[in-house]
Length: 370
Image 1 (cartoon, rainbow, N blue to C red):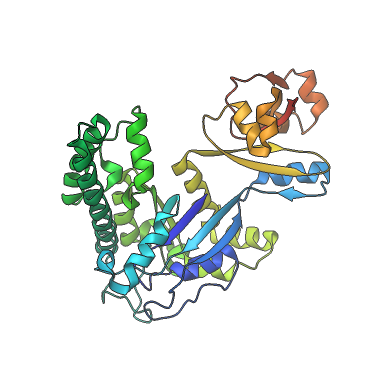
Image 2: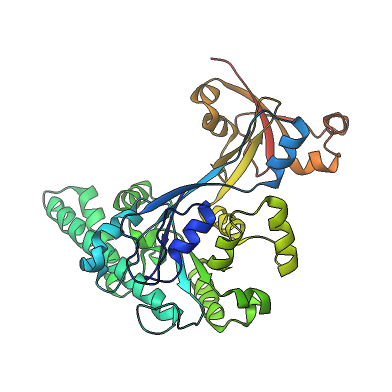
């Protein structure tokens, strides 16, 4: 999973990136375009279930699932036409699975805002407009090519040209590709959508970047955050309150120090934890687990994946020679005091076949023969 961090200059993108990746790779300064080339960082997915299994087994190796974050330079008005090296930056976004749109939701004259004032809805519209214009140019060019091919009697080209004509009008009306009426049961239409790689078709998480005072006083009192939250709800997007500065301050804390800090602040989880959780939900992802003395590991799959395909995440031979899967739910294991003897005594260890749909938190051992 690759998440692209986008937003206007000076909204806290690089500070957030440095915090969640526990690095100083991204330049963070009080002026626009301090980031030029994208920075990337691999982040382990926090999973208390994996931690517990590793503790039980005293495992030699613990391997969490990972997320790749990409810090993309700030976009400005005219980015779709090359302003601020916009074309280059837009290309970086196209390679990501989803977009984390950082929006400034705090006042303070010491941090320069590229527009001269704080207005999160205006900032979101600025970014959205540039992404829509970039998509519109691509769709228009492809529509013209398909329309030309359709003149030869190519029925598939005609269908694609008609679809892209509708999409072109949709984008021209200032609407993003996520809200277009796609037919998810049409394989050719879905293939075309994937091929286009539309920026505004990507799932979005709005990261409402607040001040440290907001964490102390209560995020719900931040009027900027409420506006972004309402917009996200209307779009069917995710909205995560976050303080990039605080995340940066605690990035080097030990797990115990982080727990103590969060408890003092009255916060249940870090912004990173919430961001990754929202990303999994948005992209329809879950994790299954494998355990043992040699290694305990979390594997990321799409919700709805069947057992053979899940096995294929480990090795292609596992899928090709799949026979059956031995499955225990993590919750069942926990309810049995993490005793496999108790699990077996209660009949909670199951044998599943090729049609079994893997569930989040399943602990699985695959049997295969090649």
